[in-house]
Amino acid sequence: MGQLFYGNTSESIEIPDRLLAHLKVLTATKLRRSESFTLTWRHGADIAAGRQTIWLQPAIPLRFVFAGAETEKLDSALLTEMARAATSSTGLVVDFADFDVAPAVSVAPAVLPTGESAVAPSELATAA
Figure 1 (spheres, rainbow, N blue to C red):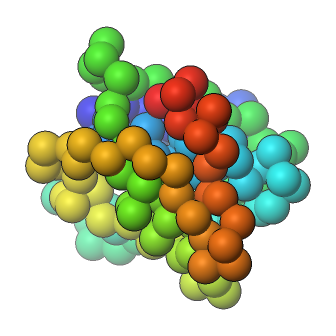
Figure 2: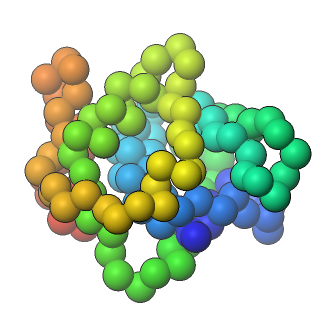
């Protein structure tokens, strides 16, 4: 499990490395464009039932820490879906359990419904 440090707290949010890699690329792309969004997830089995939401915007410090030394492979279809969800009024809602499986092997750039690339091809090479 990787860790996302949000704001100036020393407490982290544990996130599977595969999901964290996709979140890192999506977040960097959106924040570089000054596009804020919400990220929501369900509590794990070790916490009482419920969910949490954070607001991601350029002024809030973020740090991504991966448990594995190897770079995660990015799935362009997943990045496209995540980008679409992040721009919706609901925001990006993820289920950590969906990312405990083997990663997809796609590395093609994601294309948003508007036809705009969610991540530039050059960003994919260096993003994860």
